Every structure is written in structure tokens, then in C-alpha cells.
Length: 77
Image (cartoon, rainbow, N blue to C red; front, side):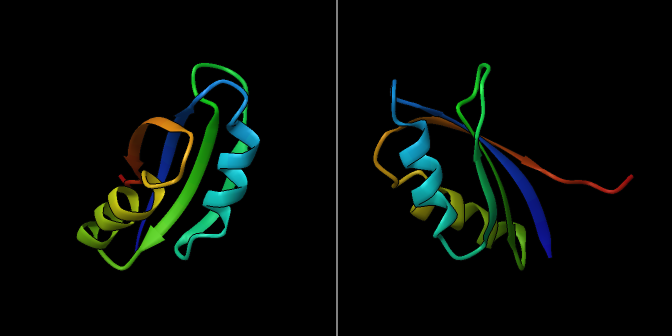
């Protein structure tokens, strides 16, 4: 299983709605609105990196109000 944090920037005033919508997507284990340079931080999981990419591009980035995402896969060193 591949896990990642996805950092999300949203349109002004949309963070709470975006976090709520993303939290309903299968594969997303947590979605919180935060302060700082990013508006929402998401934790997600998928069986492999290709499925993680599809989750981000096809489902998360499709949520209305998102302007940019940054995906940070978790590694175990």
C-alpha cells in the first residue's frame, strides 16, 4: 500500500468545502483545512503509485475550488 500527503491550495473561502468534498473520496483517509501556504492537507492511500496518481488526478483534482496540489508520497527510510 502506498500512502501520501497531498497539499492543496484552494480558491479564497473554499477550503472548508474542498476538505469536506475530498474527505468523501474513496482512498482518502483524512482531509483537514489548515492555515499557511496550503489550505487543505489530505492523507490518502492506494495499492500502488499508479493508482495513487489516478486518485489525485482523476478524483481529488476534479473537486471544484482547487487551484493546485502537491503530492508527497510517504517513504520509509
